[in-house]
Image 1 (tube, helix red, strand yellow):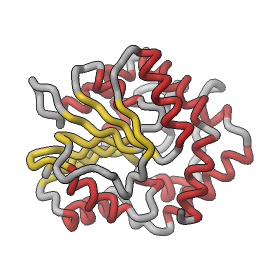
Image 2 (cartoon, helix red, strand yellow):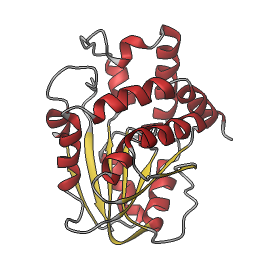
Image 3 (tube, one colour):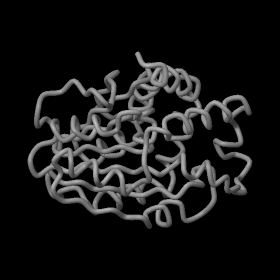
Image 4 (cartoon, one colour):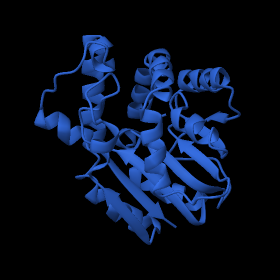
Length: 241
């Protein structure tokens, strides 16, 4: 395992329990309908889909979409996240398959999924161009990749401060963990170019022929500063095969 990947896995193993609790609260909040509204902008309607949630964490997207009648699988690089994802789906009474897997090397057959979804993952990938090629491979013709992410390394370098509520996840993380997250962000960011412009270029090179970029999604999802607020503006990239 590459040192940076080991570092990422080790860091998130310590965040898994708190993440599950927060995602369960998010699932029961108004954010649930907001996320579904974003998905409905891009997902084919009126039929059950086979969906892969890449970098599922504790399974929020996989559970969200399974509850809508889709066949969902979630993969993550961190064993502790998979454990908590399985627990979360059990709490919610949902049938979701979770698997331990590297997002840059998904072990699925060609053209396996109608849709791929991911949230706050690609900023952690040192070989994002390889991931996009692999994701194109496992996506069915006519399928869609929906990627919610942000240029976290650029935001960290800007060093803009945000006033966050006391119950926000960033407030509950010890200083040494914050420092490690910042160090990982800058190390992985050194492999990346400005986003999402770079992502569009890589997606075209991977084979995607049509895509849309939405820079305003964060205003709809994070309309108020609460415990779920993301202080870095996220974007959506929807890439169609």
